[in-house]
Image 1 (cartoon, rainbow, N blue to C red):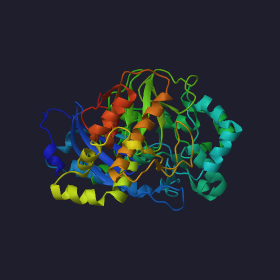
Image 2: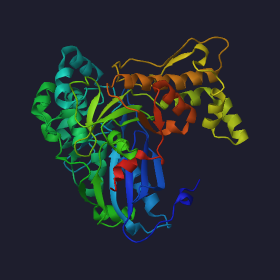
Image 3: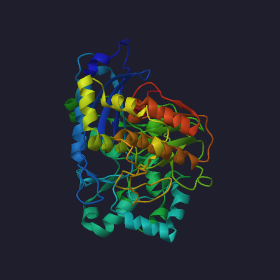
Amino acid sequence: MDIWNTIRPFEICERNLFIGIDAGTSVIKSVLFDKNGNELAIAHVDVPTYFPKKGYEEKDMNEVWEAIKSTIKTIVHNPAYNSSLVRAIGVTANGCGCWLIDKNGNPVRNAILWSDRRSDKIVKKMYESGIDKKIYKLCGSNISSGNQASIIKWLSINEPDTLKKAHYALYCRDWIKYKLTGVISTDSSEAILSYGNIHTNEYSPEVLHILGIQEFSYLFPEIRECYKVTGNLLPRIAKDIGLTTDVQVVQAAMDISACAIGVGAIKDGDACTMIGTALVSEVVTDTPDIDNFRDGFNISLGIPSRWVHLLNTNFGTPNLDWFIKNFCYEDITKASQKGINIFNYLEEKISKITVGSEGILYNPFICSSGTRLSFLNVNAKAHFIGLGLQHTRHHMLRALFEGVTMAIKHTYENIPRKFDKISLSGGGTKSALWCQMIADSLNTIVRIPSGSEFGAKGAANWN
């Protein structure tokens, strides 16, 4: 479908267009918005993840950058609107991980992602020694194998030459902002998670000392406030992508926080779940409550006096993708013959099966890094229980939907905060049946906001 056919008319009277970039784990997206937050156009590019060893997950940083430029160009070069009306670009991206650059601003190695497991043994020792509790009291977040701090620790032991070459340790958003503007900086929504003091919003020497990585503090860039202008587009970049040099690049919060803003979860007690790769559930708080919340992550929402307390279970829609790819060839063929979307076809099939999938249970730990929260087990694996001769693949698929749903329920049971509704976003919201399962299991109202790219919407932040 031609995305330009979906563009809505608007008054051409001011520079009232904004671009939101959301660099996901698998897909890079750039979205054009008007000043009222309406999605006008979307461009996306898949970027491969590399797995050099078991448990290792990496991205080519230059491939990510090329994908960013490609998606912006797709939007900007459309003749349906005047690109000179673009006022600003907001950038959000997948969080944690380690994106190292040298003194010339070039990648030192492939980026190590949030889902990488190479530092598992280091993290395990931290939990066994009680270091994790000390870190949580300062940072407000659990240490994990995808956390930049644990990755730096691993590199110091296993790739010391890599750190000698590195000049800065960035996050994905920081890398993109640097390439757009030439400015190196980060913000508290991510920096505090790894090395900071959540009460001061500054790097914490005590955390670095506890982790034993104080000698690498020179790698950490300046912390700037979210939603402030990072800088203008570099002249050569502006020319390349078809924009002007007075277009400002805004430092949005990390994708978890940006998505909350995008769905309208901005007040204390607002809850939202992203049914995507990581299956993140979060509640907005007006204080980083690390006394009542002893698990998960407290992260700046990106706006004053607001945080999100979140649990990300590491598994979501990849369960569905894996199942369809491996077990649903016949369904794909039949759906194609009938001219029906495969997801709609399968939803119709499983809707006829009773709640409980006639005795099948599914644990949805499909991610290679196991499950992170609401309990930590890097070796957790996905599996079906209770299969019988009477069951079909559609019973199994129904159980899969129910398993992911119960994981969401379990997550909220570990966030001691009352709420009366939840906003949902992500690819899973395309399934009305799945959304109903979530509402039923949590016994709460489920809200599906209009639009589709809420991370990019929160990044654009035109208000």
